[in-house]
Image 1 (cartoon, helix red, strand yellow):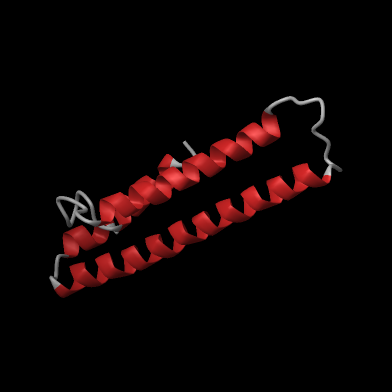
Image 2 (cartoon, helix red, strand yellow):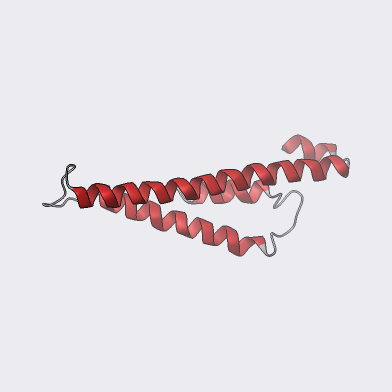
Length: 107
C-alpha cells in the first residue's frame, strides 16, 4: 500500500488515462523508483517489527542501519514528490495550451 500509492499518483499526474494512452519510456523509470521504495519500506518494516533478542534502541549498529534506511526512504519520497509536482505542472500547461477545459477540470 505504501509503495503503490505514490506510483499511482505519479502515473495520474503524468496524464495516464486522461491525456496519454500510455506512459512510454517513463514507465520503466516509474517502476524502478516504485520498486526501490517497496524494497526500502519492506526492509524498514522488517527491521523495526521483527522481534530480536539483540535489537536494542541504544545499539549503535541498529540505529545506524535504521538511520540509513530512513534517509534513503526520504530521498526516494522527495524524488516522487518532485516528479509528481513537475508532472502536474506540465500536464496542466499542456491541457491549457490545447484548450481542453473539461480535462483540465480533472486536474
